[in-house]
Image (tube, rainbow, N blue to C red; front, top):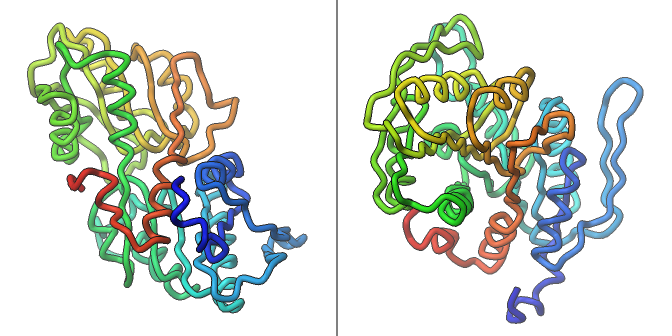
Length: 326
C-alpha cells in the first residue's frame, strides 16, 4: 500500500467475525492493519455476544464475515457486530460479505415463498450498515435490495489470470453451465482473447432443490480445452453433469472455475471423479481439509477485498479495479 493514506489509517478499523479467520488475517496483511480485538462468545442457549476491546467512535469500520455452514449463526454474528459498532458511534459501517447469504432466494418462483436475499439486505440496513461489499452475486438484481451503496466485486480477473498463465488462450472455449449465465461467459470470453462460447442446456425441477438434469451442449467444443464457469459450486451436481456432457461432446480437458466453493456433501466425491482436469475456486468461503481433493486449487480473494476497502476508505473509485469494465 502507498504511504499517502497512512496518516488517516487510525480512522480505518477492520473487524472480523469468527467464520473465516484465515481470510480476515490475509486481508489485514494486505492492508497493513490489524484486526480490532474483540470478545465473541456463545451462551449456552446459542445466543451470540460480541464486545470490541477498543473505542470505535468516529471510525470508518469494515466488518468482514464469511457465511459458510452454519450460515444463520454467522449472519446473526455479523448483524450483532454491526449493531455494536452503531451503538459505539462508528462514523461509517461497511459490511463485507464475500459470499452473500441466501443469494439464490432472490425472487419468488411460486406463491407463498420468501425473497430471503432481500430480507438479508433489510437486516443489514436495520442493524446499521451504511454500505455493502460483496463478490459475484448469484444475480445482479440483489444490488437493488439494499438501500445504500453496494460494491459488487468480481473474481473473474483473478480466475482468468490464473487460467491464462497456466493454460494459455489457444484452442479454448468458455462454457456456461446453463443459458442464464451466458452473459457472464461472454465477459470471460473477452478476457480470454475472444474465445468461442458454449452453454449446457439443462432442466431443473423447482420442487427438488440441488437436483439438475443436464441435457446437451450448445456450441462448438470438440477438441477444445473447455473453461466451465459458474458463480458457486454447492453439491456439485450441475457442474459434474456439465463436465460429463462436454466430454461426451468431444471436449478436450475441462477446467472448472467458480468464485464460491460451498462444496456441500457430496461435492468432493462428484468433483474429484467427474473428469475435470482442475477445479479452481477462491476462498470467499473457508474450505476445510475434509472438503479438499487433489485437483482443487484455491485462490485468495484477499487482495481484491483489500483493494476495495482501500478505495472505499479513500473515497476512490471501486470501478477502477476493473479497468472501467464493471
